[in-house]
Length: 157
Image (cartoon, rainbow, N blue to C red; front, side):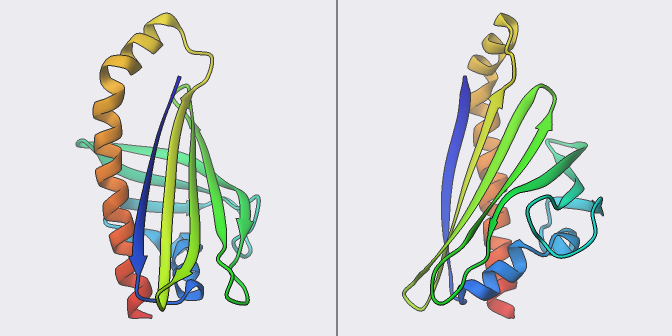
């Protein structure tokens, strides 16, 4: 049993500028108001294998999650790009897919977020059935805010 949501934000900036914001993990705590802290676990440029710990506060609770890049394609020659970020936390596998597509002199940034229980128990499935929709609404609201803040930063570059 999994839950997924997709949001798209049109950004009045070229794909390269949007990519610069999305892929600048060390600066994400300054860009995204929902991120309290970033601790890089690997050195070097943003690429497959880049790892970090991200601390966020949601619903009044601070939580740190280790994340890593599982797929990465920077935009080039007018082609969009994209990246996939993964995390495992609390018995769930989280996937965030950012896709960039140039449109109308700017860039559409689409974020698809999914959560899937790993080896779910009957109790876990029941909890997800009851609280999953509420959790996804809260998550969707936080992700929409992230996209708006990415847009503001990219448009200021």
